[in-house]
Image 1 (cartoon, rainbow, N blue to C red):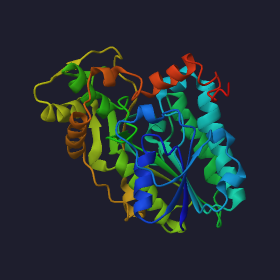
Image 2: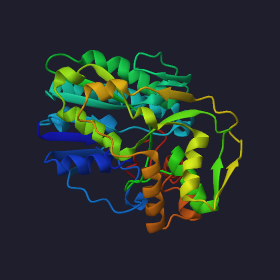
Image 3: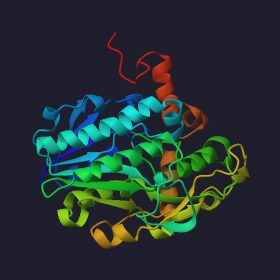
Image 4: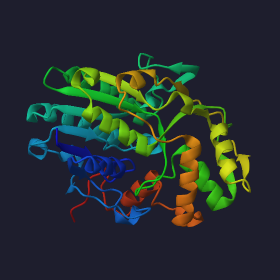
Length: 344
């Protein structure tokens, strides 16, 4: 297996995945509509990739020719955006993903690896949920992941390996930084406002995983024997990395001791709360070795925020907040109401 297609390679996780694949000697092709262009760089991307600018909804079978595996990351990856434009979330996250999986099978691609999410568990309480737990999606984004899994996993057969990776909540730095992710946001508020601002009551559970380790999981599936991953869904993370929101804030407080933790309560008691079991991926994919803990990741993020001068303007601006950037593209008429780029 040599030729790998990564969709959404200019997103938060994509550049990290491309880097790991290239370092391992794979030939990488990337397809991305590039809602988040060069002006959204936290630091410059260094891509060794066949770079194709194309909406995932417009991918054709010829785009997939010669590909051995597809790592499908492309999506509208923000809960508020999904709620604001649910039709676009359905079209891009659900319909286009299923169509891509079907096209890939027709084109003779051997592996299709889908970027799903632990958010599809929704409200799960204090017990760590396994891959067999019932779905309780609470947002358009999470519902899209459920629907895609239900339609693509049955495509798996002896010639077509389909795997769904249910990622824990991502954090960390990337060329395409996001400050709308919980750990990144809490640390960003410390840099921008001198306070670690928690907008809920701090009690909900979140499983966390560094974006670089999500990329490692994709590489592990690319390299895994088909019988270990075919037709399977895996929670991606580490058992030790389940935290309550207030515990994440406490970890940040150790790195930013001059910043006070403040509970704003504007989101009330966030009903999304889930602890997750990662026993299955640990047993099935022994080559998946996460390199990060939250404590180590926060230290690295803090160093990077200092190096690249995170401040109030960057923290509150559009470049690193998905909803704000997409709204900017809509309001400036760069994309139309269906989220396609305007040609005139």
